[in-house]
Length: 433
Image 1: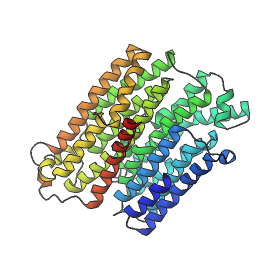
Image 2 (image 1 turned 30 degrees about the vertical axis):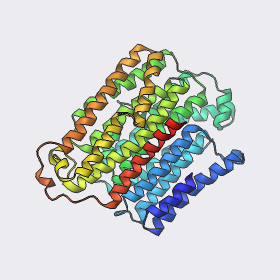
Image 3 (image 1 turned 60 degrees about the horizontal axis):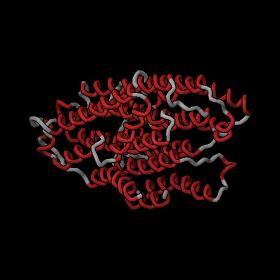
Image 4 (image 1 turned 90 degrees about the vertical axis):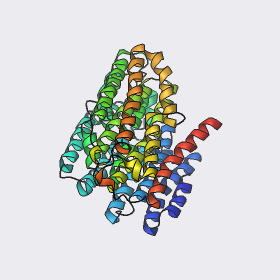
């Protein structure tokens, strides 16, 4: 599959150098897939699990779309950072060494930090980079201590070995969980995310929302397997889910008060991450499956929304709702894409986001009715702020800044269709099988 994606990328990208770079970072993942089926890579640190495979595919597909979207401004240094980040993410999703995972988990911050500092839009990019480093690195220190403690206890970093022999230690899991809840992030430790999104360039925002946030969910899944703990019907698990879900409610209300398009999309990511926490901590295969579906759906949808915000910025010269009103009158095709991806983001049937959210309903009812209430509120508020996002940009009195609107390029059409087609493919596969 990875080889097919990399070969298609050569056809989609005009520059030979960009196409070859894309092929080179797809090739290791494809080779690991081949050798793992033959049972050869046990000793070189490669592990296969369903969530890692899905997120690896998501990473590779989004990297191709990001290079396609950023081709006009993509120069050597920018392309190199994107490729390095893609390689680090893929390695993070397939490693079977807990310490290696931690190192890759932290090193992934460096390319995105350099993108923000080098290509950020405003002088506040320094503050955004500082917030991101402080929150993520400081929050990860307890996780490093716990990993070293597990090694001193069992003399191994191998994830599968640790999962066989670890006891049900909720204390260890609670303190190690902070790193992943910050990376997701959960409301309350989310301050770094809107700042990073607002200041990041197009490619940085797309990869940050599409894949980097999923590192927190993947780490939580991997870490819970390592500690071998079940959160079903526990008081601490219930408290964590309630905190994240009511944080999702507050993030939904924060979306309604935003005047910047990218800030609103960033807060909507926090809302979806609360659903992922509920699915992962449910302790059921149904809940974990729903979390995986939401991760994939949010990865493509949020990346597309950030690209749409960039396209709108190119037309209006601003991301403020006050300057983008009436887009439907001058660029109906762009407005149609806004409508489609807002529907996807709110979980409108039959999109895969709807599939993931509807799967959470029985999970929340099985756990507690106290969980179901905020789940319902967040689902309702998701519809509200997505309709607010669409109407504020595309309806209303025509802004004077949109009178000389340009048409969309073929590259922009191809990028948006590239985000949409995987969602349709996943829906068809689910219906068939």
